[in-house]
Image (cartoon, rainbow, N blue to C red; front, side, top):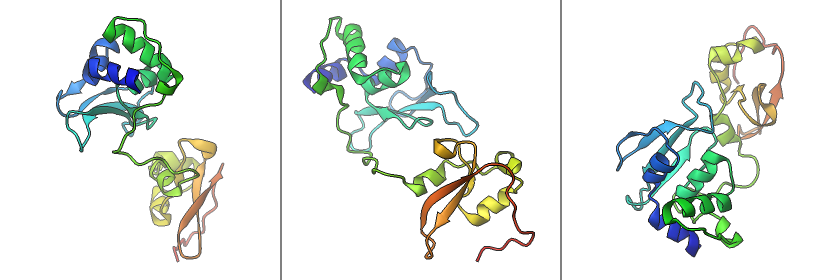
Amino acid sequence: MARFDKIREAAHINDVARKYLRLKLEGDDNGVLRCHCPRCQPNREGRGVLTIKSTQADPKRRYFSCHKSEDWGDCISLVAHCHNISLHEAGEQLAKWCLDEDFEVSQSDSEPEPRAEKPKASKGFDPVKYARHLHQEQEDVSEFGILAELCEEVGGMGRSPKGMNRGKLAIPLRKEDGTLVAYMGVDGDVTVPKEWRIA
């Protein structure tokens, strides 16, 4: 990590975004900066927006996050994300730019620095997290022959924008106690009783 630390000290993430990546940032340099992510196309929910902000623990320490891909990290991770390259390659590119030297980054340096702010993603499928990404507006679900109100009544039902159910109506599967455990994807029209009631 020592080599990556040298780059992090020499390259402030705001400068990397503006001067190296030439991103058109808007906002406060000490607060939140925003721009369209050059790699992810923005969608109607505003995803595809990239932000740079300070951590709560240390206001001087800043990180980026892309709201569409959910990638986030330091200046090296930012370059890796925007150029769609490995951290190893991003480290080499930034070293040439900010340190003006060829920079051999060892494989042990290819991991990003530890981040205390965000918890590690749990292994396996997280149905609650999945539910947050479902599209429930009328234009998203009308092709399935249902109303957006039904999605609200059922709770956690909508058109899936990603994963194996991408483009399908994601219907929640629950235990007897109501705990959300999985999703079933449905293509085409969904037949719903005229007098739909949630038990």
